[in-house]
Amino acid sequence: MEYSFEQEPKPAPKKGITLFGKPKTPPGPSPEIITQLNSLNSRLRVLEERNSNLNRKIEVIEANMLRTQKHVDTEIKTINSDVSEIRRQLEALQDKVDLIIRELKTFASRDDMEVLKKYIDMWEPMNFATKSEVQKIVKEMLEKP
Image (cartoon, rainbow, N blue to C red; front, side, top):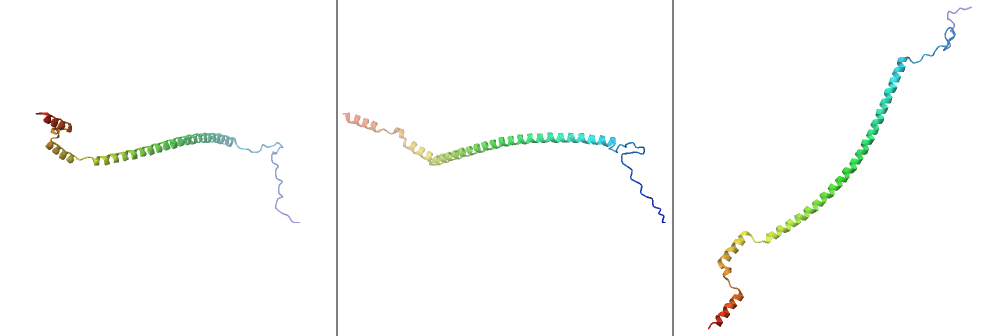
């Protein structure tokens, strides 16, 4: 016979039963862990609420931005049309100024006017007689005996 010094394996203890047959409460999370989980849960809810609020604010901001962008686009189109109208008016005004300048070039210069004045002063046209005056004088002379 051989003897072995090895012990026979003991049967595994049954879970949930104590030595005297009372059911054992399964080991659960400690109150400290439960408190931490509750704290994390409440903080998670707060963060989700903040995230939800931020998403709503972003939606409002985007809607306002789109409305503002449409308004700005309308204003830009109005300004562009006004600028185009002002350009047309400016071109028309430039054409008129060019016409006036061409007309002014056809006028007599100051020197020309001074020459004319000298000739007029020299001829004294105020002393000239009209055709009817000359005829009247001639008639009077012919009628005198």
